[in-house]
Image (cartoon, rainbow, N blue to C red; front, side):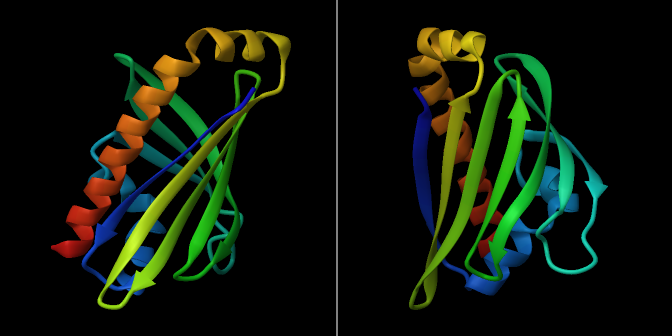
Length: 150
């Protein structure tokens, strides 16, 4: 049992501007209100593949930190991240699709349990987690939209 979902938003900005915002990991806590802090742990010599950071958010009233890294990217089109925590593998894809003068920014999120306990917890909390995750992703996308359109 895995959780997979996608949210998207239309943004009146170029793919290049959106890319510059979503790949500015150092500044994302200032752009995305759901992120409390970011600490970059590893920086690649060029590009974004291999960029690794620790992101802290408040979820369900508690602060939680996850270490994430970019596993794949095509400039101005998409990047994928991975995180491993509490017996789960989390994968996210941020993708930009140009629509003339505007773009659609989508965020796909997947969580796959790797241990028996993670599978059990996913079974118990899947509906609640999906609803909370959609809400958080939508807020993140709208924060990026605000930054890109300003």
